[in-house]
Amino acid sequence: MEIEVVATESADRANTALENLDTTVRKFRERIKNDLSSMKASSDRVQSEVLQMIEKYKTAQEILTSHDMEKAISNAERLAVALKAISDLSTTKLSVAVFGGGKCQ
Image 1 (spheres, rainbow, N blue to C red):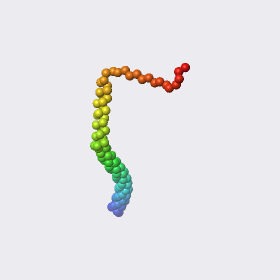
Image 2 (cartoon, helix red, strand yellow; image 1 turned 30 degrees about the horizontal axis):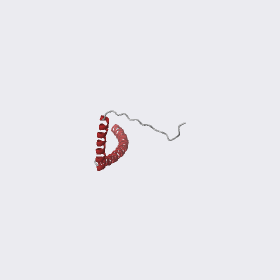
Image 3 (cartoon, helix red, strand yellow; image 1 turned 90 degrees about the vertical axis):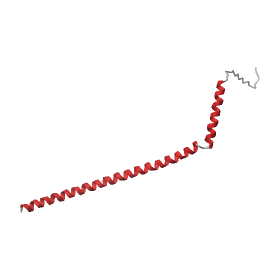
Image 4 (cartoon, helix red, strand yellow; image 1 turned 180 degrees about the vertical axis):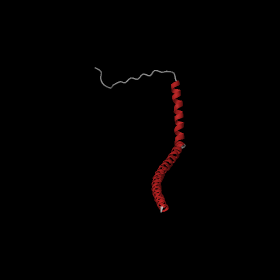
């Protein structure tokens, strides 16, 4: 009879342990599922932003290597040379007079 009581108690403890294990595993799976969903959402956001950056870099590269940009740089270089030449000129006084068309009294 004592063996039967010990066996019953052991079986009850084993069942309780299995129920606790089952509860723990369910909670673990829920957390993992939530974590995986969050990671997937973050990954999708990062991937989308990277694709947008790639498109923006392509656009910028096209602009910077275009004929219009080459022409603008050339014009800017000529302007810089002209401004340097103007600043190297000797100082000249320039007078400006403004006359009104009215009668003096």
